[in-house]
Length: 269
View (cartoon, one colour):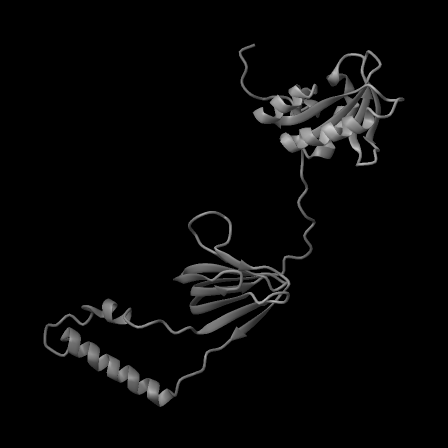
C-alpha cells in the first residue's frame, strides 16, 4: 500500500464530471491499483476514488528549458522588486509577495492517471507538492471477524429454544424449503410447528420473508398449522405492526444475555 500526503487537485470524468480544487490531501493507492483521495475534514469516506479493476500511470510533466526558466525567474524577481519597492532603502522585501505568488496557476510535479478497465472512467490527480510518500507491505489480511451476526443469534436461540415458550423443542436449524431455509423450525408446548426468522435488525423485509415461509409450510398437511416468530435484536415499529397484523409473534433477542455476558453496570441491589 502506498500513502501519499500531497498538495493536489483532481479531475474525474465518466458517469459524471467532478473536480477537486487544489488542497492538501491523502492519496491511498492499494496493491490492486485502486486509488482513493481523502481529506482531513468530513467523514471517513474518500472524496473521490477509482476502484479496481483499473490501471494507474504516473506521468512526469515535461521539463521546461532551463535557460528560459532561469530568465523567467529573473524577470519575475525584477517585477516583484518593482512592485514591492524592495530596491528602495527601507522597503519591506516581503510585502505583497503572497498575492503575486498565488496569481498564477500551480504547475504539477507529477500526474497520476487512473483508468477503469471496464469503462471509460478516468481520474487524474495533479500533484503540486509531496509532503510524504511511503509504501508499506501490510501482508495477508485475515479479514473482519464479526460478533453477533445472524448465525450466532441462530445458534444461541437453537440452544435456548425455550425462549420462544416453555416446553418448546428444536426440530432443526436451517430447515429446508423450496424457497430457501427457515432459520429455525421448532415445536411449541402445544405440539404446533413454529417457523422462526432471525435478523440482527428486524425490518419489513424480514417480515415479508417469514410470511413467504409460513404460507409455503402451511401447504404441507404434515406440518400445518405453522405459526411464525420474528426474532431480532431490534425491530422497527413498522415491522412490528406488520408482523403482529399477520399473526406473528415478535421476539427481542439480547445477544449478551444469550451468550452469558454479565452486565457490569452499576446496580443498587
